[in-house]
Length: 287
Image (tube, rainbow, N blue to C red; front, top):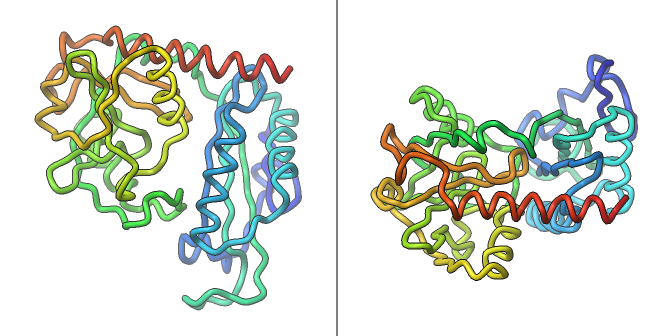
């Protein structure tokens, strides 16, 4: 079955989807995006997604392309049309179509596209084996709290990590790890989770990150919100990453060296299961 995608008010087959070459997303990367997980055919953490997109659009001065209820319903319609059970939906809002000019156009209407992707989130085999990480330079712009579609720095960083045969790249700035190229980064030392704080705008406010910090508080797991160094990461007892596309994954190797005993650690396993419990409880309540 051909995948059905959403383009500016229409649901079309992916091979029939078209956007203008004058769309400012294409010309300037002038837009914002979101990724939301789907479990058991239901959206996860909808309100958190809407709040973050609202923040991104406001920072960019882009109007919502439709009301928020309609935006969510568009996601649900994509789930129905693609019979999506588990995976994610990517959605993107740009400033719209206009003649190429750096200044904002005055009459352009925001453009919207969205598509589904099937993923194994609950039974991801990497949850058992763990993943590897390589350090890469953080070359991003300063407005990192905006989930911008201008992702060239992350693309280059991810490719550097892949060339090192790593699953993810942890970006380093001023001698400290900020976050992953497409995930949030954490280490565990002496039973305490350490992760970069939001203050200062050095990292994206990850939705999975916010959920995990709430879970840690409920479960009595100490959290130290501070930058950590690459050396600290390599000497950690555990490390892990979080993202919409996989929830939580253990990091068992950094720059070719094992983290701890080289296996997923107990706190990481506990947090992964607690996150899945949170997500599944939410979607089952929505049935």
